[in-house]
Length: 247
Image 1 (cartoon, rainbow, N blue to C red):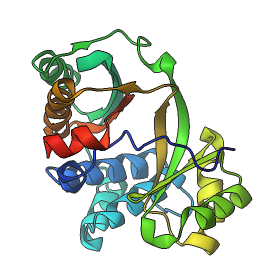
Image 2: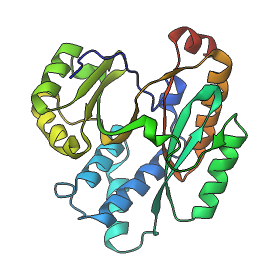
Image 3: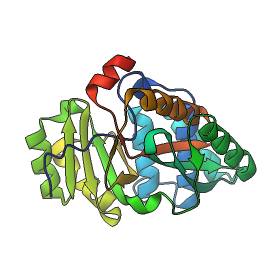
Image 4: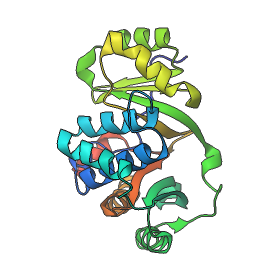
């Protein structure tokens, strides 16, 4: 278990992107509803629902909104969403995995393909990108819970596989089947996690220059703005110097 990995959070870029909330509540609500519909509406008995609620709380989503999302599933008022994963090649040789929840497959694939095509990339076939990523569990904590050593020790004790700590927070990686057990085991030492979800971790990363980074971030922004897109994962790495120049 590597304790002080240089691996950076590739789910979100730093700065304004992290704070962007366009459509955030609607996406969180959709995930809560789907999770409650697929299993029991009790978060203690439904790990996916528990993770979705924790993610919503981390974004300061009101309790009433969370409960309404659960009630939609219980009452059968929810739309029938399906989970579809798209794989793509972005600017600078970057690989992207786009996870969606949609009630209209044709609309979603058109929007995703258009967004990628207009911003320096192209949609790939299933499996064209995901083979270079590992499917893992990702538990997130803010930096304030403690220093890297404290988090590493807690993660080691809880049975995690890797930890990456930075000034932006802590990422604790687990085997897919261990996600919720590790998350529970961490709570006595670190408190409730900011997020716990299945994730795509790249086996290697690609350093992106300033020009490609600007195009890539525009692409990610467009995808994030789509209500059907839940998460965008990538294998890119951008240096602090480039980030500062891009603002």
